[in-house]
Image (cartoon, rainbow, N blue to C red):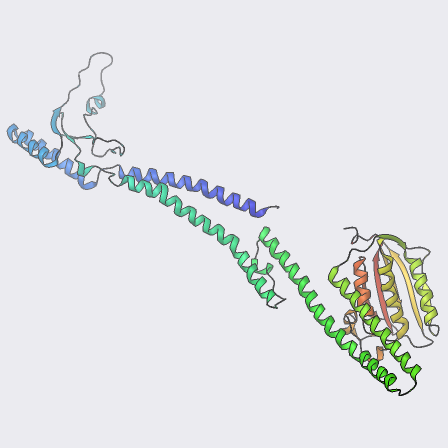
Length: 453
């Protein structure tokens, strides 16, 4: 799903807001309902007053009843009265018994008291006998909901603020947790820990922040490989340059001091200079391919024509070895690059010819299958140990002396070939032949998708 973080926030915030309104309204109604009823003690007091008034009325001592009402009025600073009600039927159907008994002059003590009315309500405490009731304006001290304005502010203002703050906190944590991990990983990476990764630390998240973590991991992996590769490349280059530079210094000293044959020393200087130049050129090309990931020129070419030229050059250079080819009439490649491809195949072919003993044979075959071409170059050299078949494609790596040959090999040929073939969408691998020797396989797409992107 695209924009998962956006939809997650929408769901979270929308649901949280609706639930907030719902529970605030529920809390207001519930609290108002509870605060609208008279306290149990006050209801008992009102009922006791009604019973006392009824006892005084039943005794027939009206002066005592009046005195008690006056004392109650003065004590509670309220209005109080004793009233009798009667219902007279004027017209229509006869009244039912509940109509005659349910007439009210005031509010029952069990009823709710409206919290928003300014005046205190008149409470009615009916007598058990007769149709008389004690009517009293509710004393101020018994008025429920005295704290309602404060409670209402707490529920409608303070509580939403707290809940929204809590919601913001969880959203902040949800966003900042992966960002903090990313920040720590970045600090670790800048400190030299190139193996640090973030995506696994984010768990099952699948949103944009997880994608950011994945992007960071890809970047860290790529940059880490480049930094390590550059360091190794510089170290290997400095090591490889020491020997030809030392020989070059010796030859120069001999020329200066006049020792030995001057022409031979100059030839040595020229040869060492060419080796150093070739080493530097190959190293710079390898670094360029690894670091820059260049966009090569797209062109269509016939692989057979390209191989024919390389085979002719190899036969001319290594006339004491045999080179057998099995090629089709044509093998067209689309969106490839003849320069990168030619240099890669030439390096592999020269490597095979170099390590093949004099008088032995190198076999080259090209086959097509589906959307791929497979070019295989097999020599009759000593082969390579199985655990080194992948290592030989690393820069400046050379196997034991049985695979070393004269001719100024610096261990860059296969490494360069691998990078050049990857640049045109190809791949390369090696395995030992059934009857000895090393077989190097090159796989190329008929239509290269890498350069089209």
